[in-house]
Image (spheres, rainbow, N blue to C red):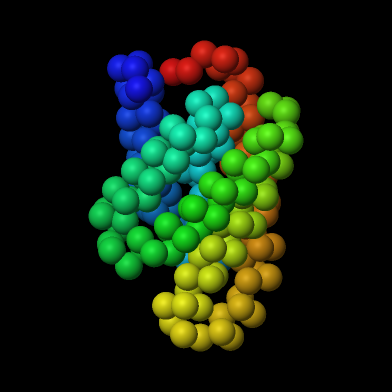
Length: 164
């Protein structure tokens, strides 16, 4: 890994972590457990298409680990399960989507993030009935994911092939 690539990954990790911490301070109009807009995912979607899967994995993992330190250890398993499911879906989608379709990647990533978090919640709480909460998560998560994907798409269009 070159110095420029390492610096870019560190910068994107810092940006994602800052967004993650700032977003935790934003009160949502509907108080639901675990509900967030997922704005830090803008960086993940952008990195997937600008840098590739390897660097994106390092950025995502760093953000999840550092974010769980700031937010408290109990979020680690939920974030890791959701983040890894989202990441895997984006790795597959990257092969089929054009730079004009990053919004799709954000929406599909949100679906898989919710599925991963729900799986973790069911395993940790040993309560299969939590699955009834999934339609609500998906109904709110898909538009939020589409928004973060669109923001990443606009960022990628603005920066072109230049990596910060």
